[in-house]
Image 1 (cartoon, rainbow, N blue to C red):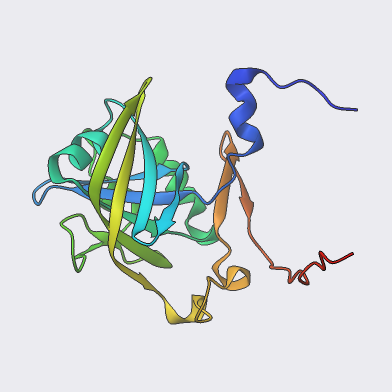
Image 2 (cartoon, rainbow, N blue to C red):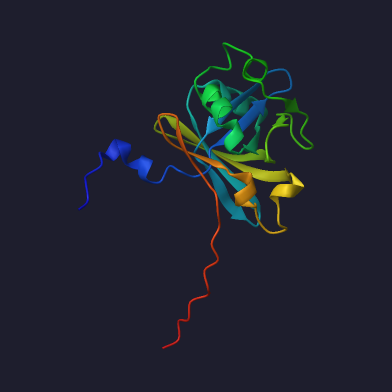
Length: 187
């Protein structure tokens, strides 16, 4: 039996992509915020997409610098991710208060997080305002991952244990991969 889900809650059915911490900054100001709606858009050219609520500090800094960093985090950082989401960067120095370490990025002004498993540095190529949010598209300029979490082709999820926000401070954790045999489409 299926149950109905209200349209304004339907995103909870597919919202469990990795919850990344986005760092923004313009050289003097900086912020860190959890953003669920971040994803690859293309690999040639390498583009990432993130959706940011209009009017928040992250949007202000992203518009000012036209750069952002996607920080991939694992299960041990879940409490800090939640704390970042429940505080405002204009009101407190999140890095210091929450215990995250900003590090200089290689190609952009916003920092990356020393505690992250990996980070992706992006420069804005497009923005698309849409009903209370802005879709930001960034070209990947540089990316790094801690060696123990990389197998040469993909993230080792069994070690990385990325977190995926479901709702209300509840996270799912990626714990394993499966290898599916190639399907035979011949009859």
